[in-house]
Length: 189
Image (tube, rainbow, N blue to C red; front, side, top):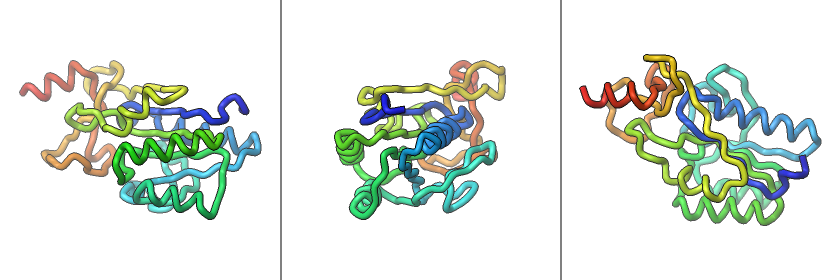
């Protein structure tokens, strides 16, 4: 797994597409290979557990709970790891440029960085940090859920409620994966 040293791996796509499951799988593989790993979870994500990263399939892993990129900087002042995982990176507070700088610094120190995050919000607008990370990544994996209306590859996480705030944490109760065609049909009604 040494070929991943100093590499950035990005898992992105809609909700329910397997991004967090892929992050968890990658971190577990590095652990098996005897790398020191750490995973970070934004504190705002309390859907299934406040202290662990949990997939929609209910598998989980230990995590350091953080609010901002500053918390990750502070972690590395007293701890070290070879592999860094960041789940739901779109919820991490701090300017996109600062997050990019910190990730670049980790990569330059030979750390492997694995991130998972939504590429778009419920209005199909890109999350800036994910949009900025993708061209910097060594590996980008675009995951697709299944559209709940027609069964094709989902493209966006459609919010079922009328909430207008950009960040509303939820799961199946709040969101459903839709393909572009089904999303546009709903949007145009």
